[in-house]
Each structure stands twice: as structure tokens, then as C-alpha cells.
Length: 598
Image 1 (spheres, rainbow, N blue to C red):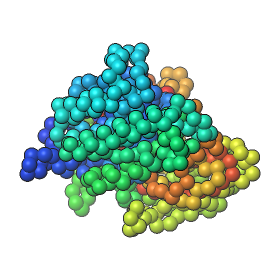
Image 2: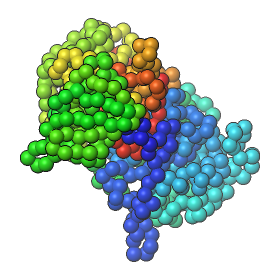
Image 3: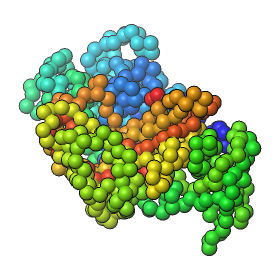
Image 4: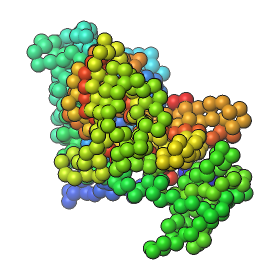
């Protein structure tokens, strides 16, 4: 960890925090490991993804160096789908996906690149490129060797890897491999029954490896996308987005199967979404009795720091300091409390200087939204833009629906939130019954925005004036229930969006974003060939941790959690949103999926 301007942030550039080496698995009486790590049950199982381009698709990047990116393929991979459907129990800290890479290219990298991460779970997709034929030319590919097409040779390499390189307390999940097949429009290329037969043999060999090793699981995800009536063994049309890689629908089908397997062994998980309206910036904020002065090292925040149970703010806490007015925008942020008494606290502010022109609001909450459980059903739509469609009903406080096309009608209501098993949950669902009519087949996207920070407090009930600043780490997530989707339904995604400005010029400087359930229209366009699954489902979304880079004379102007809703023509869907959480992260885990798009 580093401390920048008094705000604790993680190392940038995807660097991973070092974990405690004591996080080891329990052992059975015979010395073999019990799966997973009990100590990780409530925070997510530390997971690494490993393999060829199917794994690269999990992070949205067709990378040549294995870097985690979100700038190419759709981030709707098999593992991602399983994780969303299970409530995000996998803490995916890194993906090592290499397009076109083979068994011999990947396995030697494991000991130096994956094993040091001490993963509890490694999910592997490997063998596809070997079975199709030899490849050469990549910067980190091994020289061509005819044995790389031979299943017995490949199996022996896999066996040696599992025996010699994979730790006993790491569980390996081997995903079944799918042969090349049909594009979304049904065009088949590069597929024949003999190639498919090789894939069937390989998958049988993976299943046998799972029998040999106590820490290996085989999941035949290829079965759910294969066309049982096709004599060449290829997939059902629509399951691949080209002729090789799973489409959104294909990845969803595969993810459903992976979910069923993982749920039998993954520890019970407690997600990090909001569980109480009490845990918000607005509910916990305390106003100082005087405008604070920042002397480049520290600042004293004077307020009555006592209540019935002791001090609201103590040494070692992190507090969000928000001071209204444009003159104070460089002083806002998240600070470490170094001293506390009944009359207030002192916070560390290295490099921050200036005297505020107004009293400050101080809050210890990490959730910066004002209404995460949608308990207040009126007061929304404070500053919508581009709304020409119809919004019926009361939009909750702290929510704005933007860019609604004329062909869209959204009926807004609330209902009691329920958990996946049907039991009582937390607060309310915000229910959006969406109907699109008369679109003439046009693609459309509108936005459900939850403001966190802005240049002004519009109006005061929104309580959003400048809670964030550069140097902080943030993420956004919520629970979304999809019901009764039909017609041109094309899905949703979420993002954490931040607007950074240059103080010297007043110009826009950067727009960092972090995505979840994301698709890029470059490779999975909003067309009828790339529809979203229509099944009723509940997904837990949470963007990766995103650290806002520190640059001189830059401040955060605005920040929002957003749910984007898409159609490719007439249709309808009911979306229920609950437990919205835009949180500042005081102790970043720094997931491998950390990324910035500016």
C-alpha cells in the first residue's frame, strides 16, 4: 500500500497486494486438502483464471501479453456469468489469458506467474489451439513440435503440471473445450467431425485427470452449447459470437453449468453490497463547528465527538471530508484519523494546504450513496437529460433516469427485496417495467444514474456535493433481478464513472470508468444476432476496484454509479434493482481486473 495526499490507495497499474502466507487450506486426515480456504468464505475465494482466448474473454481483452484489459472483447465470459449468478463469491485477482496459446505455451508460465499469487482456485480453459493444429509466431509461444497435436502427449504434460507445479491447497477447475462451430447467423467454418472427435477425446482425458487428483474438478461446459443433431459436433447457432468464442448467450449457458458445479464446493459467501440504510454517507455525516485549515501535514476537524456508546470517530478510522463550495474542491477526500478526542479529530493531509471557506461534513461510511435501499420512493429525477420517453410512477430519491428514447415507457415502483432463495432481504427493489414500442428495430440504450459526487448540490436533498477526490479507490455494484424479458431485449451493464477536471485550465481531464456485465459493441454489437439471455435471473454486479490516479492540480468534479439498459428493437423487460453501493475502498485488494479507460 501507499499513502498519497493522506488518502490510502492501492498500488496502481494492476500490481497485486501481497496476501498473508498463512492463508492455507485445512487438510483431511490423509493429508489431502479440503477444498478452498475457510478464512476466505465471507470475502470471496481468491481466484485466478488461466488459459487461452476463452480466458482472455473473461477480462474483455484480446491481449498478446496476458494483461488484464476491458478494451476489446465483451466481458461476458463463462466464469463471469457463474460469479454474477452466485452472488460474486469469487474474488478474481488475475486472469492469465493468451489468445492462440497452447498447452506448452501456458503451462511453463504457471510456476512463475500464477503460483506466487497463492490462489485458492484456478479455473482453466486449455487445449483448444493444440487440438486444431500447430500455431507459431507469437512472442511467447514455444517452437512448433508435432507432438503438440497428440492427445496422449498433451495429457502427460497436464498431469506433470498438476503434480509438480500446482499447490495441494489450490483447487483446479478444468473446463471442457468446445470445437469450432457456428457463428450467430449459423455459418460454420473450420469444423468437421474428426476435429470434433479430438475435442471429445480431450474432454474425456480432462475428466480422467480430475479422477486422479483430489484437488481437480472437471466441468463439461461444452455440452450445453453443442447441437445434439449436428453430425459434425458443432454448437447451436448463436452460442458463439464468431465461430470460436462463446457469445453472451453461449457464455451464459456455460456459466449456468459452472455455477451448479461450483455451488457445491464454494464456501458460503457474504457480499459487500449495502444491507442497511444506516450505512451511508448522509446518515453518518457530522458537520464541523468551524471551517478547517489544512497545513500540508494535517487538519483539525472540530465537532462533538461523543454519543451514548463512545466516540463516533476514532483513531485509525478513515473519514470522507466534504466541504461545499468550488473554492474548497481540492480539500475534499478520504483521510486517515491520527488523533481523536471528545472535541473532534485530527486527520493526516500530507501535501494538502488551504483554509476552507465553509464548515465540513465528516462521515466514516464507505457507501457514498444516499438511498441504497430505495426506502424513499419520491424525490428522484433531479437533473435528467435527454428524456423524451415516458416515466410513470415515483422515481426514488437519489436516482435519475437519463437519455430515455421516445419509444420507451418505464413504469417505476418499489417492492420488498427478497434474496435468491425467496427469503426476506434488505430494503426494497426499485422495479422498472420497461416497454419499447415503435422503435423500427433501432438499437437504444438509456441510463439509470445514482449520483455520488457533483460540482454542486442539486438540490440539497441529493446530498452529492464533492464527496470524492483523486487518489481514492472506488467501486460500484448492486443486485439486479431480470424478469419477463422478450423481443429486442439486449441486456444491461453497470459502471463506476468519475469525471476529473484540471484546476489550472478548467478543462475536462479524464473520465475513468470501471465496468461489470460489460459488452463492447465492436465485437458484440447491439443487433438481433447478439441478444442477452431472456431467462429470469438475479445477478450481483460489482465493478473492479478503480484507483483514481493522482496528478497535480486535478480534482474530481462528478462521480456516479450507473446501470445501462439496452434494446435492439421492440420488446419488454422487468428490471429490479436493490442494494446499490458506490463505495470508497480504504484497503484495496487491487483485483487483477483493475483498469482505467480515459
